[in-house]
Amino acid sequence: MDKKIAILRGINVGGKRKILMVDLKSLFEDLGYKEISTYIQSGNVIFKSAEKADELKIANSIEKAIEEKFGFEVPVIVRTAENLQKTLSNNPFSKGDQEDIAPLHITFLAQEPAEENLIKIKVLDFSPDKFKIEGKDVFIYCEGKYHQSKLTNNFFESKLKVKATTRNLKTVRKLCELSQ
Image (cartoon, rainbow, N blue to C red; front, side, top):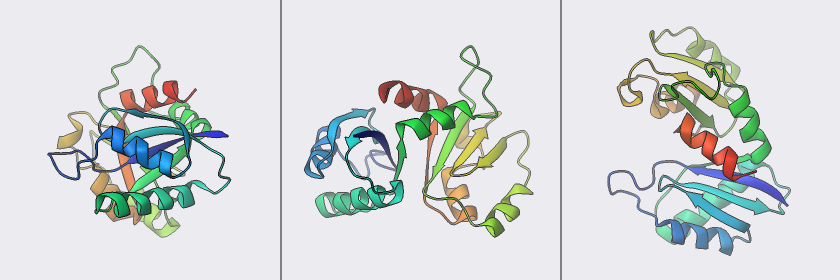
């Protein structure tokens, strides 16, 4: 069984699209997943899966189950524990464990964006904020606060035309730790 991480977008924010973690864990059990744990209320689920389906198919089945059980759509991104660790290791803005990690975020994309969308976005400059796209990951460095940056989750979804969800580096590190 492979360890996987499901990263849900936009639940339990401002009292909207509320899902209790105990209910989310129950939903994953109903889907046949094992060794399920959650991390913070924003929708991070670590689980074991015997499924050999790709990450996108697993995410789609979780999305469908959430909509059926809770009555609203929630985009879900799934990564293997190994892929999440590689993402963390490949962060071009990371300087190691002793750095100020507050400016660092990762936007996880459901799939690799089309080349024409990548070309359009790579020429944009949002200095002093920076971003770098590598496969299905967008690494973000925000000089100020993330919520004041133009490099938001909605921005990347709009420009790249793919589903996405963003986590700060502290959360990504913890998910890697919990999935080992």
